[in-house]
Image (cartoon, rainbow, N blue to C red; front, side, top):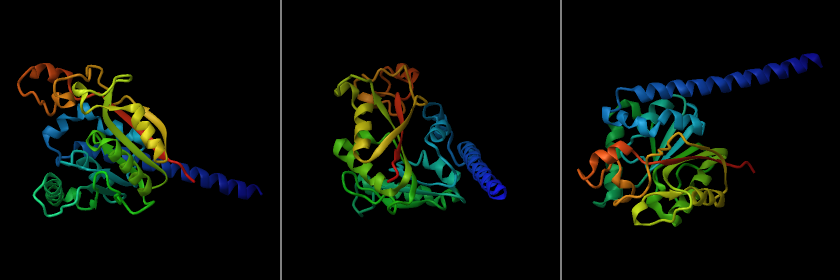
Length: 270
């Protein structure tokens, strides 16, 4: 009996050490990816606002995960996720399909594919098709450890957000993580033209819960107290867009990028 207990204890210690090892490996690979020469100086300059290492560590990122990034766009986060997962995990970019039409969605897919083909750091990245407001297979059902969306919810509307949360739920394993970063509408403030692009935290949490998720954490890592969320061109008044051009440019540069919610949800095990 003593031998069995000893073996069980040793096994538990071994599993615990393996878990710690993967966490440490993930942190090290994130650090290397963020510092990598494949990232432009312009993209690195935005780290002060987007806090990629702190954000991904808060969400529970590990280098052996299967991670889905919804609409990678220009690939800002892809430049970090791809090398951090290469060799031990998997990155799937769920992006708009190329339908052959000359429109924003098809052209965005072409630009992303060209970027991925241009550097070996992206050689293991896979792409799936994501269509806003329509059921989409972000990854084969029940195979993803983490689904991430960065500053996208405001583009999709309530119907689209509800659908993408259901898509994420389908893609994730039981216990899988949904990470959401989004421009944050101040609590108690109603949506109007001056705060276009900002999203209610309470509404986002309710939408995620309706899709079968549980909120397990919220971080202020991407908070910005200087952002008052009331501008002529909404959130796009601030950098990096600076929608007003040179008008009050220094004022908005001093504010910096938007105040953001950073939420961690989990798909509950059945």
